[in-house]
Length: 166
Image (cartoon, rainbow, N blue to C red):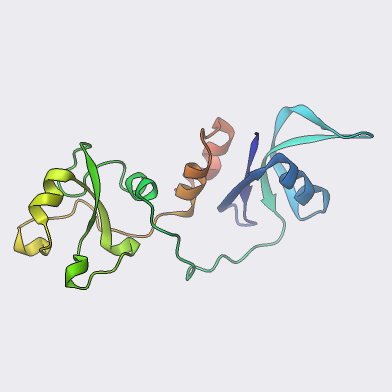
């Protein structure tokens, strides 16, 4: 199934949708085609552009209060598939910076990718108690990350739109 990148009016990546859904948005005047594929999209009586990247005409406010659910795949991708303590890419696990046993929440700002040895070494202690340091502070991932995770392969035509908001 062919997928289409959907951008907000500000060119921020929002989502990935089907060709059919993208065509409906364009046909209704709610979006414009920024990139198309060199093949026609045919109906019984007409021929249209095959959308590859579309941009919404009106800005859609995306509330930042809506938290994206944490998944291991998204977490590992956010952290570059590397342990945030030592930088290796060995057996990766999820670690709570402030352990749950000490009141830490399962939020993006408190979870990091950790290799199994670092996770075992840290245990349920705080970083200063075991003299460990984070390579980068944990933060919520950029919206473009979820777009890249939702598509099995990121087409070359999407890259300029994803890099700007990565």
